[in-house]
Every structure is written in C-alpha cells, then in structure tokens.
View 1 (spheres, one colour):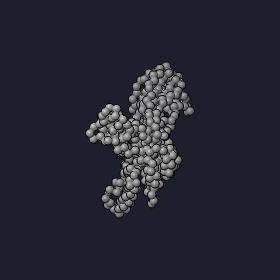
View 2: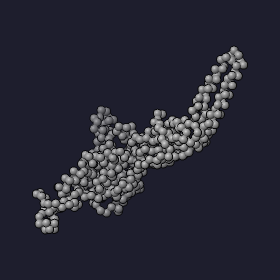
View 3: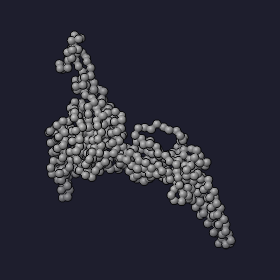
View 4: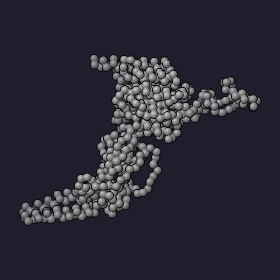
Length: 477
C-alpha cells in the first residue's frame, strides 16, 4: 500500500479539535505465535546456496560448500536477530486528524516510535472494521533510533455509531533484513462515527451567504414582522398605528414607533423515526455507498439543528423506534450542539414498526409551549390511515408541525416510466396507486394545518432547512 511517511518528534502534542477521537498508544509485545521469523533476504541467500549443486555434479565433495554457505547465513540470521529491538522498545499510536463522519473521506495516521539502538523497518497492519475500510490497511515504516515516523491511510465510514477498532500487528527487521520479529500492540478501542458534519457546515454557509441573514433581518424589521421588541425610532409614513409607542411619543412630543424583529429563542424539536420503514437502502449520489433513509434523516437533522441554533432558536431531539432512543430537551449553545451530534451518531434503525404514539405523548408531556416540530418519517403502505398521520394531527392542536415523509426515488422513476410489457404494466399500476395514496395522506395533513411534504433523500437536508427559514420569515411559530 502506498503511504505518506513523515518524521515527527516524539512528545510533541497538538491541540485536539472537538469531536476528534483521542489518540490511542501502546508498547508492542510478543505475538502469541513464535514471535520471530525469517526475512526475505534469508530465503534468497538459501536459494543462492543451491548454486553449489552445479559443481557438485562433477565433484561430490563440493556439496559441502552449500552446507557451509547455509550455515554461515544461519549464523548471520542469529546475529541479526540479536540486533533487532525488543518488542517493548517499539511504541505505536493511532492518530485521528478529523472526526470520522458518515460517507466523508478522511485519514488516520499510524505512528511508530523506536526506543532501540538500531533502525527498525516495520510493516504494520491496523485491525479496522469493515464499516471504515473494505480491507485492513497495511503501511511500511522506517524508524531511526529514538525517532518517530508516521504513515497515513484513508477511510470512508459507511456506518454511524460506535465501532470497535482492533490491534496493530507488525513485523519488523533491521536494515540487513535476514531476521524479523512479530509483535502486536494493543491499541484496541471504540471510535464513534458521527453524521455528515461537512453537509451541516455547508447548510450553515447556505444560511449565512445565500439567505443573507443580516439583510433579511433588517428587511423584516422595516416591515414590522415578528413581535419581539427591538428598538424605538421616529414614525415613518406607512408604519402601523398599533406600533406607535404613546408613552415615548408623549415624552418626546413627536410620534415614536416601536420596531419589532422576528422572534428568537423559540423551540424547534426534531423528531426522527428509526423504525423499519427507515431501513430502506438508497445509493448516495456520487459514491458507491448505500445509505439508509435514516442516515439521510440524521444528516438533515444535524443540518437543521446547526442552522436553527445559528438563528438563535433552541433545539430539541427525539429519536424513537419501539422505545425512545434519544431524548434531548430543547437548548442551545456549543455544548448542546455537541450533545446532539453524539446522540445522532447513536441513532440506529430497528427491524420493527416504530411506536409513533409513544413519541407524540413524550413531546406533549415535555413541551408545553407552542413550538415547531420537524417530524422526519415515512408512510406505511397499509389499507388504513397510518398511525403517524393521526399522531401528527394530534400534535397540530398545540404545535406547528412540519411533516417530512421520505420518498423512494425508484418508485417515482417506475411511476414515470412508460411500461413496455405486461409485467411492467402491473408494476406501473402498483406504483401509481402507491404514489396517489401517499399524496392523499399528505393532502389530508395539509388541509388540517400540518406542513406536509414528500422529500427525496438526496435533497432532504436543503429542503428542510429552506422550509425552516420560510417558517421563520413568515413568523408562523
């Protein structure tokens, strides 16, 4: 494997970015097997010793030369073995440069420090789970005495949550390359793969740059949208009479108008369905990774949480299956955002139907004041009305509900494709019926005041962030 090798100084620590896993280090120790072996050059020397067989065909006494040759290199092997650093004289570390995020390429470094008196040429294999790499990475390192070297390998996480990292297995030789030792370094530990942090950052930049938050807020203040008091100013033509501050007008002997801004510090609850319907696998655009609907929902939840906190709102999280998996009360701040990120990383899909009633009752008991509830789920293909629709209408009596049903891209493609055979005709009719039924359910929600949408997984994050910003613009909460 090609690796980037760079010398580094031992004992120099660098600041660890937030959410980056801690560096794990350990001294090497003897492998459970023999612990020693023969280098490639030793076997090459033995093969070269067979040259003595050619003259021995004419003079059998020359065969002794081959045994002398082999014996000489066997002695050299013992001598080289004694020069090798002991296993405990090598220390290895696994260094993370960035938080491992779902479907985001990143790199991990292996550091080798040599406490011995001679250079050590090592081949190190890291025992990584298949969720990070298809095959365990192997890197080659050459460490001078008292020095530390580093090699990097790439990872592409395909699963959120806690993953178990294994040990380092290494074989190392001197520069002579006749003998080698086998060792293992116990740096096993757990690393948490987070949701797609890069996408959340992009959504925040979208909020700041594309929507131009500051300009929008100034425009809203001039229109008097919102009911949070911001400041006083002189009356202008077009100002509403109800906004005139009569006490300030009496003191200054001229009309003074109250200026309002869009309400801040409101509560936004993100509700994630982690039931069986969210287990459907969809190929991520631009990659070969197959992500579940729940993975897309988690990424959208993180993007919305970051944007809402940037806008001054408090954000709560409720993820549920048969039971409530994660429940964070609405709050704001960097520490709360970190809690949301780590909680989202632990949300796992379940093979059973989710208990939507439990989620609705939990929200109604914990959130008394009116808030925005963003419910990301899917609609079951059943004869009756799905339970999630009934509970969304129940929440609508007290809160503003944004109901986002995740669509199935291949279903829409099938409904839009012209059938060319009898089998395709039956599939086409079935797809049309499913699409129409889903639209009827969403229409029923809209008619009763729920903001109901069907969104494709690929545009889920951007669509939900846009909907949230529109709700803020219109002061619907």
